[in-house]
Image 1 (cartoon, protein in one colour):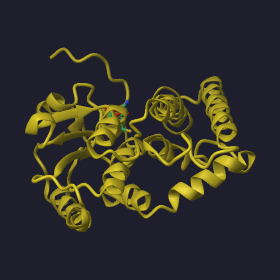
Image 2: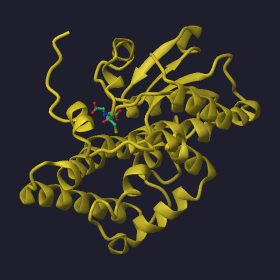
Image 3: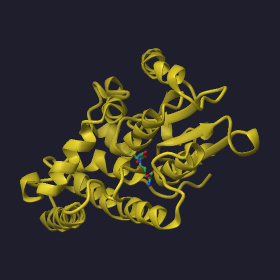
Image 4: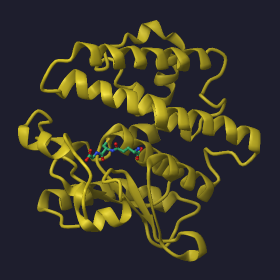
Length: 261
Ligand SMILES: N[C@@H](CCC(=O)N[C@@H](CS)C(=O)NCC(=O)O)C(=O)O
């Protein structure tokens, strides 16, 4: 993947930031995990997990506003032209493995490290339910809401209301779930990591967090974790100067149809 000067600088900065983790990691791999990443809530899921597990990693920015997700080398790793993705040089059998889809990456890293993804079947099912709830519900609904509320060229009141209602409903589900437990699956897990970046955007999503006191308490608790803070700060500088309303950026990101090759 071709990288410009600014990106190299950002990568070096991020690698520097990530470096102390590698020194303190009990289960270090010889080569760092390659993280293909852009600072968005889907990217944060993986940067948070890597930070929580103290796994050494190197950041490879995928500037989705410039179309780097369509580069042939990236598509070999992530055929859905979406980040995040990882390559673990020390995958199963000691051979490299490439993984796309944030939920699959979280599960892989959880199995690899034995952290934040319990082995015991009942506890594991609890985590998976809430992980898939995020992957199929909160993420896509909040994503569509973001599109119609902030970026669509026409203002479509019906679409905005449809997704605002749905995000509101999902927050209600989360709030009830969190009434009598600290985290979504009881103990802190990859399910919480999957949700935090999305729930953090409640204001932009036209929601009132005070309507959801248990969700609010959970959000504050998760965001207070140093690894979550490091994960959500990763590559923040990369986004500087990117204008999502720029027609050139929108031409890259919106109106995508099937690729033919
Ligand atoms: N289901 C995917 C979604 C990933 C996703 O939507 N990534 C966005 C950024 S948040 C992306 O790479 N967009 C590039 C594009 O739309 O071309 C996952 O969870 O990994």
